[in-house]
Amino acid sequence: MKEFIYDFTIKDEYILNNFGNYIALDIETTGFSREKNSIISICTCEIKENAKISILFAEDLKDEIDILNNFNLNEKKIITYNGDSFDIPFINKRKKIYNIQLDNAINFDLYKYILNYKYLLNLDNYKQKTIEEYLNLERSEFISGGEIVKKHREYLISKDSSLIEEMVIHNRDDVLGLVQSLKIVEELNDKLTLKVNSDIFNIDKIKMVNNYLIVKGSTSIADSILFNLFNYELTIENNLFTIKVETQKALYDNINYCNFILKKNFFNIENKSNIPSPEEILILSVNEILYDNVYNLIFSILKNTFD
Image 1 (cartoon, rainbow, N blue to C red):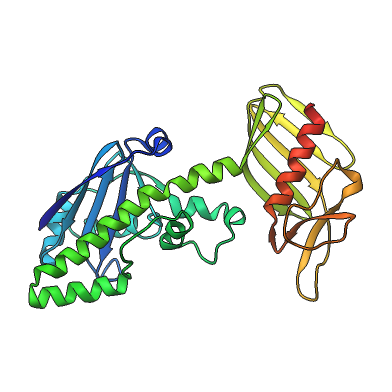
Image 2 (spheres, one colour):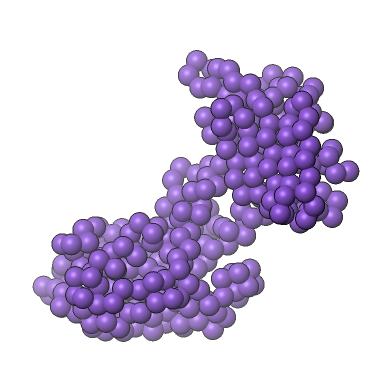
């Protein structure tokens, strides 16, 4: 087993203030099977200004047990990208095979977090590479997992040290990209925050249920409030709010349905999306939520209620 250490300076105040002392984690493996494949390397980085990236690398397949014995994140707060589905179950299964005590880490899975708010981004896919490109983060080269497996096989035969460097740098860059991609949380939070006078509303969930638009979140308002009008319902309790709006549903085109409201029933709302629609209606979803229009509607409701 070899260990590689790289210095890394984190200057972004949002990342330091909101994720300080979390540990970013990424693993490379010889395949997807937790039973048949093994860990090539584990990369970690504790998030602080003067950070260090640590990589434990298996020079031989038998080194996996040494890596796992030297890896302990029990009771730590970690950050992964799809780690709930891959990295953490893979590590725990391999530890179980070797009868090594399992970690009980608290994981923030950035991939799962982003999927909750796909309607804010509307990307073709939500791979880490795509998020990095969206944030204009630059990498010298992206290498696929399949290429890493091929390089590792080649290394086991040739013992060419240059192949180790390529694999380790890829693992390092995955963690660097993961840490820097945490900026997406700040961007999403900004998009999900409404300010009405001195009151703050943070949207947590938006969904369409039985043709009702339901928006839930937290608010700075501590009072218990209920508004039940003909066109919407607003409740606030324990600093949590729910807005429920009845919508109408119709075919948008020959294939897709949309949910919409009549503008005349609300207050100075306009179409903020790039979806063409009749002037008298506001479309809130066409298969997926149209966030800009929903935001505009919710802001109008809150402003009319609390102004």
